[in-house]
Length: 301
Image (cartoon, rainbow, N blue to C red; front, top):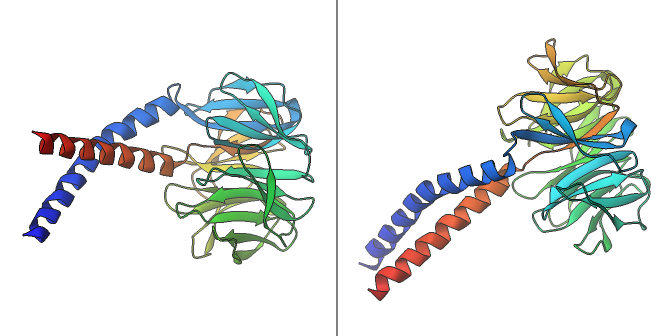
């Protein structure tokens, strides 16, 4: 009898997650992409952060950050590496505030973890640092080799591109255990985690883009993108990568077929994209709270 009651409760909960989850998912997606923004791009050459829409058009979010490179989004703010000497925060209204001004040495890529910490690839010290909400720094991992790009998977594992030849990708667990996911890459730079559960990485020395499975199998996806930096899997499933020398974001259709998606940037560097796990956690929580509220009302009748 107890088992049947529990089974019925779980079935009702799953049904509610399915129904309410889809609604919350749509609301979240609309809220974060009301202007059909696909991603945000740091343009080092002209001190600009751009909003790039999914039709290829773009507009500046900020023009007052010195030589921006690494960029990520978390806790309602963008965090941007400014001039390789400090990290600043950036609001949706374009207001820039110093966040970290000391304790870092030539920082590169940034990533915001679900644990509420900002992770920093500090290439000057070959470490990964993490900062709390007040900007206080601690060391998360050491022994990297010119760390550049950072990205998280859905389990909270952090992936780092090591730019010193032979380049590699390091995997670091939430507990700080570091292993080599794959090696032999030619000066890897940007890296992102795609909604297809694969990693995407640019390699500057051979003008390429690779996909890398979470098991470490690397496959070349594009060739001929001059000194590629930022890379991401768009919301429509298209693979895109930026050329720092040409100032163009390309759509990758095959190894030999790339097409300009957006042009006219000045040394594009890193990107920030919405994280799929944010939607999953959000609509599951909404569904669970709604279900518990309904159960409480039913019992009070």
